Length: 165
Image 1 (tube, rainbow, N blue to C red):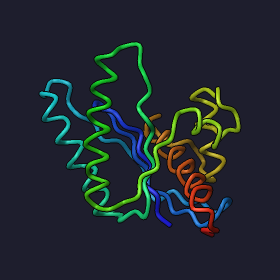
Image 2 (image 1 turned 30 degrees about the vertical axis):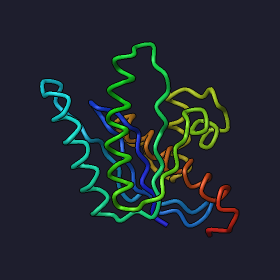
Image 3 (image 1 turned 180 degrees about the vertical axis):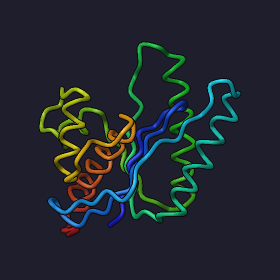
Image 4 (image 1 turned 60 degrees about the vertical axis):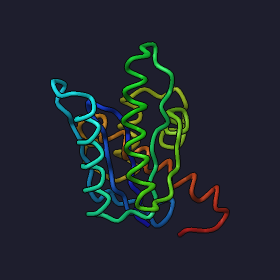
């Protein structure tokens, strides 16, 4: 099963495509980031995110997608912009009929490290170990997207109540 993990943002969107066939069988196919130029109007940046997510979807044809839920930020302006970017990503996924699993940062940390208050470094080390990588993916947003894909898989198995491996 191919899972697209997405760490949403408007400046940087982390993404990862994983093939997961069981709890101990995970292959990171590719990961990266979508970056938008801060000098561009917000509508242009959102279109770039939408277009690039569609390119990734078309290239890999994922079976499922996991995306991190937008959590409240101290900065309302930032939260609004991340919410807008999340909206265009969700639209792209919905248009392609890809089932979406929204996960919280706490769920992601628990799923990959076993500790809901894990810091970025702990999550990255866990991703590296879980995927059998020599190094954690860079930048952090790409590593977070891998963790989100793993978490989405856990939720797919739990929520469908069927053995997917």
